[in-house]
Amino acid sequence: MSEKETLHNIKNKLLNYLLRSYDKEVIKNNSIDLKKEVSLTSLKLNKYDNFIDENRDFLDVVLKDLIDKNYITLKFNQSNLSLSFFDKIILNTSKIDEILLEHPYSFEYKKRFAFKEELEKFLQKSHYNSSFVKKYLDAISLKVENNKSLTTLLVNKELNVNNIKLTADLFEFLYNLKNKNTSLPVRIISQKVFSESKYLENNISFFIRLFINFNDDGIKETSEEEFYEYFNVYKNSKYILIKNGLTLKIDKLKINLDRLNSPISLSKDQINLLKIVKISKIKLLTIENLTTFNYLSSLKEFNDYVLIFLCGFHSNQINVLLRKIKALNKIKEYYHFGDLDPFGLEIFVNLEAKTDIDFRPYLMNETIFNKYINYSKELNEKDIKLLLNIKYDENYQVFSKLIEVMIKTNKKLEQEIIIEER
Image (cartoon, rainbow, N blue to C red; front, side, top):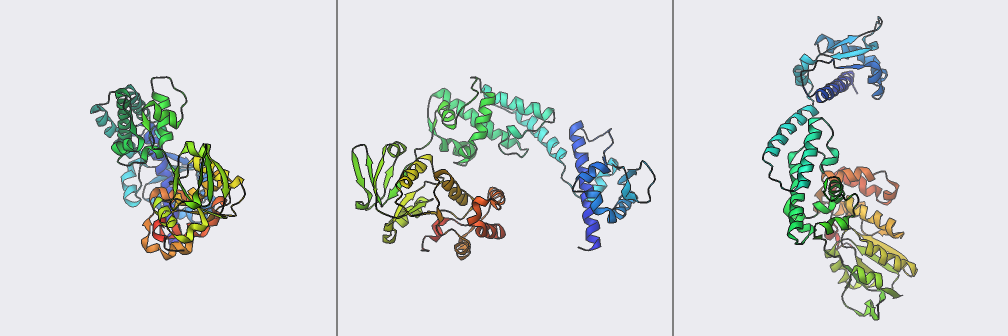
């Protein structure tokens, strides 16, 4: 790095520290007309990655430039030959606009002030009837008025009134449903309110937490199942699809899957009741997506496998079935075939953890990914966050090269496109 680049980086960092301090003071005082001095001590600055000690050779030059522009002043407790031995650096808040022309900075206080105005307009037009929603909106208003964090009240952490509106809409919808004594599937409700069928399920822990805090019935603890039951909401039952290799007994009914030409479906209750009488295969393949399962189960070469459709993220009943299969110690090779995306990898790792079975990835590697990359999709924000979280997780070590390729290319791949690769 050149000397010019080094000076530029030090200047940017120093201004960031000062402007962040200014931002906090504005939020704290709820006004940009600060009466209080905005400053940082050398002691506090050095807590930021040893900022002063690491940059002392260049800091004099940067500080002189900022002083000459009247952006800052320095305070010393004793005379020093070097500017970098200051005790306190004081921001000239009257020069903020000039500083921002040279050094753009996104102030949190601006977001908060704009959000506050937006929220006030929204509350004036509010048409909600349920006491729950009113309590929720009152809690939002109180925190905004007192400059408190809204993290626990926003499913999406961004300061956005639409975020609040969707949560209020959901509970208004649920309470209306409850009062009408009618029932609807959870995904239909999610689609109606959020325009996304899985949104409610994916964020259910947040909505349950709000429900516990603001409902009128004094409920202090509830499960996902109880939450849905309270509002007359139901989830579609998941059925396991399975083909080949097992002889099952359910009550008095005996089923030999090798004699059937098609998969059978099993409900949660049937899985709890069934006994596995015999296993005729030594290989088992679990499959994430239905299209892939149907295709592979139609091919003769997969008659050598016990094939199980996971129905996306495997449920507890699938874990029960797999543990029953494992207990007989007949299957020698366990494979899983899922999407080559962050959540496909998460399903694999979770499947191993919940069943205590040593699965092998089937067609889930960087070679396959690179071969079919022309059919890939862009990673979204949630994908990227998960990939960065699992990158150094030892549980994902088998996918380390695949994760590197996904991060590098910013791509993901669905398993349906690679079903011809065998």
